[in-house]
Length: 326
Image 1 (cartoon, rainbow, N blue to C red):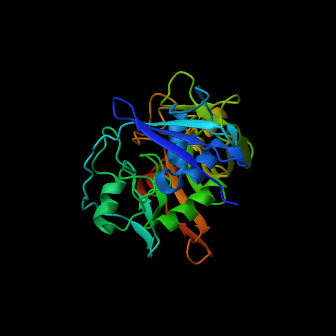
Image 2 (image 1 turned 30 degrees about the horizontal axis):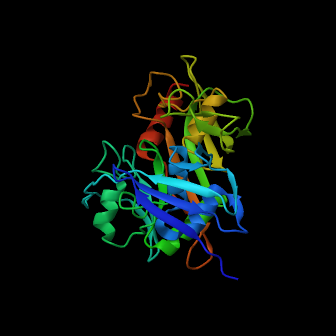
Image 3 (image 1 turned 60 degrees about the vertical axis):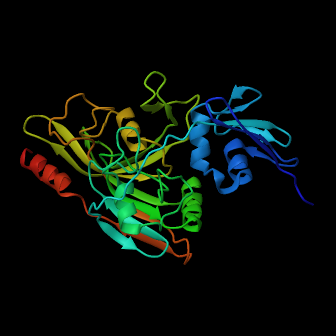
């Protein structure tokens, strides 16, 4: 039996695109999944989530959550904001490539590098470097500003990222991210010593109620977020300062997850002046956090692959400096 999908597209005076999408009869489920399946490659699931979180998707004139359930016959109105023209140029920026094949590239991102162009950062990003290295061999699912980008880490976080060269690889990696089956282990330096050797923080994350640039523990509107941690080394200095070197394993992957979760148990990351102390005693230029291990099912071979990247020099130097103070 064939299913008819009804989509109409029109434009507002400011040329924003408006899509009226009617959920096919017999279909039901989360709105983000329904739309990503119904709209095909036009919109990635992450793009749909962005539109929902920014209030650009409504049902019955009401804003919805990503987890909203919809049924057949429901009218979903999608307002797609104007695309601001931005010329993203390839730049000959050195890349630390851990692995590369016809489907993907594993890059060890340095501290201070923004992953993709955004307001205030149209050059010097990882995308600029990838465009020079790969030319047109990058997936296009996430649009012109994020070619190949299937996930990201913060500007001041170092470590591993997977970049996809084609849409098939992109979809298969994105599917693994969606079900939280990708292995991601981070090393961090935090304030305070631990009495326990390991633990878990299970607390939902959502936008901060006042500062929309920040994330926060949000039991009412947040998404499930789980971080497992284990202690590698505690430090108690002669100046009565306490720090700990830890490993964090992400069960989920939310924005600023490790930073918010560790701050919530009174162990904010050293250098994180957003969620921790206003002043950074070590002048690390951002949180001391490194994505050291990344593992997933390869999109072509179907076999599990895992990659690792050593701690950057600034991190190891900082650990040695603190050890000398103990």
